[in-house]
Amino acid sequence: MTKLKRIGVLTSGGDAPGMNAAIRAVTRAAIYNGLEVYGIRHGYEGMINGWMKQLKSYSVSNIIQRGGTVLKTARSKEFRTPEGRKKAYNQLVKNNIDACVIIGGDGSFAGARIFSEEYDIPFVGIPGTIDNDLFGTDYTIGYDTAINTVVEAVDKIRDTASSHNRLFFVEVMGRNAGFLALRSGIACGAEAILIPEVETHYDKLSEFLESGFHRKKSSGIILVAEGKEAGGAFEIANRVKEEFKEYDVRVTILGHIQRGGSPSAFDRVTASKLGVAAIDALLDDQKSIMIGVANNEVVHVPFNKTIKNNKPINQSMLDIADILTI
Ligand code: ATP
Image 1 (tube, rainbow, N blue to C red):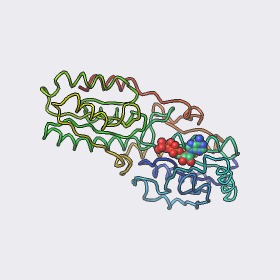
Image 2: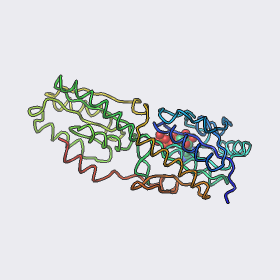
Image 3: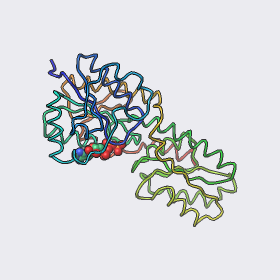
Image 4: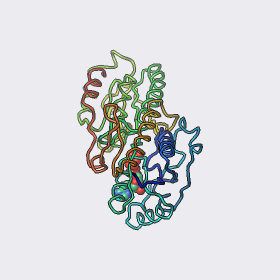
């Protein structure tokens, strides 16, 4: 039998729609299994400073449909230090917390992994980020909602693009990963998709523009993933303006609207599934794992694996994009 009596739950790193659904699922699944739950506010900052209080079933009522995170999130410099983690450990002991569920991205899991190596308090993770860049899981919570937000915005941009015969470069989030750009680009029928994983994309784009696209079609949408290597939408659009003066080029950076909004049904269901599975895993004495989803089944991925490996971009999605764009 498990010795667990009380667990903590927190959200960390960038916020993502569906985090609230995950908090709700973790809380209710824990209570269902006879555990007490403490909500830790402001991520690891709250763990260090003891900003935590008990969550009851009703505490998580009416949040499944809300974007953001009711527990707030933060990036904690102090948790990166052994002294910070020692303070966090002392707070967990003081509040009789036996295990924690961390909802966040790879940075949050890197912190959880180090902590679990130093102290004997099991941590499990739930992937929550719009970037979908975590190795070992097909989906992260927030990704589906962000895709829908991008598609809705691009549909609107397309109306004005076609009215003025303009070529729009639309930049979407994703840090160094092109998952969001690729999938939403396919969904909104972009003329081209530029992602950091494919170095030759700019060359293909210029070939396409050279081939006289403007004579066949009056407007276009080029989706660009933010990224350090090739530069963002502004850099690429400037290059195109220089090289192809016949195009009327505009840029839109979608920015933080991609992080907000009511989570999609898919994200809510995924969050619910992973939240319940996280409690099952803790009751089963598991630790240092991310609860993910692969081929529609819940999977356990060691933190080590998800942190160290880069998630490859799906080749079949790239092929689809290649066939259907331009
Ligand atoms: P997102 O993908 O949305 O940015 P994330 O979880 O990757 O989310 P980070 O800012 O990278 O976001 O990490 C969140 C927090 O995790 C950091 O602010 C820090 O407190 C902790 N953390 C990250 N890396 C480490 C590490 N190597 N050691 C200890 N703590 C870490």
